[in-house]
Image 1 (spheres, one colour):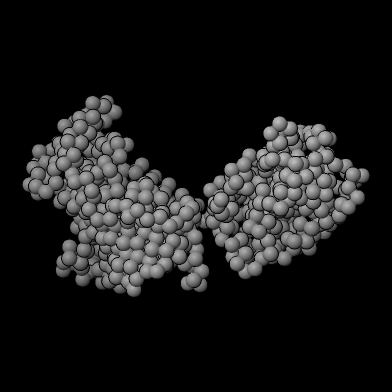
Image 2 (cartoon, helix red, strand yellow):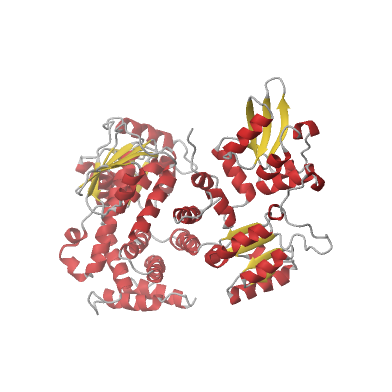
Length: 638
């Protein structure tokens, strides 16, 4: 019977991170003489209890936690069922024998030790075993309690450390290895403030000294310094087998792990965007400009600091565009307002030079090719004013004005619009309820409530300010209907196109008018009932939307689709079924090998067909398969 790989189980249970699993797999490929779980514990990436939990999950067994083991008692006649050597050396403990059915209940820390399990079954003359998994350290303590010292003549020192008198041992002492002097000093100041008993040391030999003196129960260190600790780990484990060794992301107050920079950055930028663009009432145009400028800066490959500078500047210029400035209605006034506001707070980013360059551009005092961040924002503002939407060609739409823009900015804009257009098509096609475009002004009191109500019913919802933008969005999304806010001239402009049905919103479905939304939903169902059942295929270039992005969108949607890759040396295909990766082929390759080569490519074209080819050659969770394929791709590139 096959079992889910232990690394995948650890990821599923949240016991380890992807990079931890990758590190262990790399060590094993390099010839490490250990199994996955043993190596994870040796490197401090998993503890005894975590490994027991993972093994229990992997083999569908029950786990006995340490606190229950501490209260466990076993009858002497049951203990006598197994030889003492087998109990001590292999940590196999019989707990109960069903005499009638000859079923032996057995505690083990390693359900994969088949020879020892068979030996236990033979010794107890049992017809079968009922296994329970327990942490290795807790099992050792239990065996020592049930089988005292005078019962074991052959116990060796490397299996159990010598006892140290209570008065000479510092029970519960934690040793933290931190080689960076500034970090170590900060930890010592924190430790002094908290009044704890942690020792912070900067040399692994100092850690060894504490362990040899039996004065350390736990050793912590940052994952980033694992390479400095790794040579010492085997000797630390030999000196004290029950020592808890743990690698952490970082150290922080209250024993909280350090937070990765990317997560922190995304959180604060999301919060800043909400406060500036939503809570402070920036216009819908301003919000779209900020979103587009940031995506363009990322697509152009600007360094992180420059991308962040563009993001901050775009948010505040959007706010400046909507600010009430009597007598100042020109475009430059909003930029000056935003620059003055940010200058007062002395931002850590060089937004001032970006604002200066942007001002020279909007005044016509300079041509393209200057400050690249300013060029991104300048072009994003022009794109939004021209109502460019997902899938549009910026050069064709801007016409002669395209010459006023930097070539790199135009290229980034085109890439973002193509990517957004393809994603919109995928989301719309995978959504069973269909896509709709709500046409309402930013000031419309019912627009937000309408979006929320339709989204809750499963619709893909987009919002537009006027008829031209709504029609462009509707065609890009392949929307099934347009929802108008009731204005006669707007409805007439939408119906004039004739290609997409229009549903009139008779009243704004605000909190006080709950009856409007059901009527709107009923009208939409009638319109969308006429749509063809099978959504059309979505096609595009992998250079615009990589296969990884396509798969993530489809997996999140939970639908069934077959992605065919053409235009390369070999034909490729990936099957997603009910939101799960189930098959991959690429030329003569199948399964994981095919998936790896496919996600590595950026050449050729793709076609997403919402159908099931009936093939299955992948096993495991979709997230693990995709992450493993990306890891192998990165290793190959390196």
